[in-house]
Length: 254
Image (cartoon, rainbow, N blue to C red; front, side, top):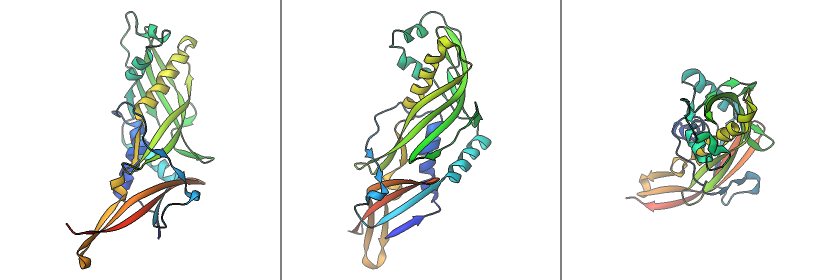
């Protein structure tokens, strides 16, 4: 049985927004922990059961989502202090915590567009990439350094069989800064990269309970239970397809 979901239900949309994008951008994400699960296999490798549901999210979906976030809400931001403190164990960078320092906001703000880059989610050569424009400030060697620029990240998906949850893992690959003094460039880039990686992982993309279901069958005085047994992914042109494999079980009505 194959069902293609072209229009997502409200619950699933909320999960995806909270996972791939909103959690990535909005303040208050818990400090990083290891991302559980195994990398998602390709849909072309087949699934363990013919009972599957396919969820498709295309480029227009993410473009519209981001446009709404930046036009209807305040620009997303989060503090960089945690990232700075985490990196101060390095002898060279320890200097940034020594001596009197001027007040510094130490915050990174995500921009819709800046430095010639537009914040987006893109599908490129079988990968999910997230270019992001930003501005901010951070304390370096006793001075408050303001910066702007953009970063490029990759997003990998994992399925944790124990919790039936699809997780995302952001990896900031490059940080490009505009107009930062040479002495501070490497440190600032490190703060931004470390801050993004530490603040957003692991990302909950789809929770098991949001895709599994239990349906009472009154005529049988029982309940049909559908549990996720496997998840595969596939990037085709400008969309990502998540294939959920199901195992069905008939249970006695409680």
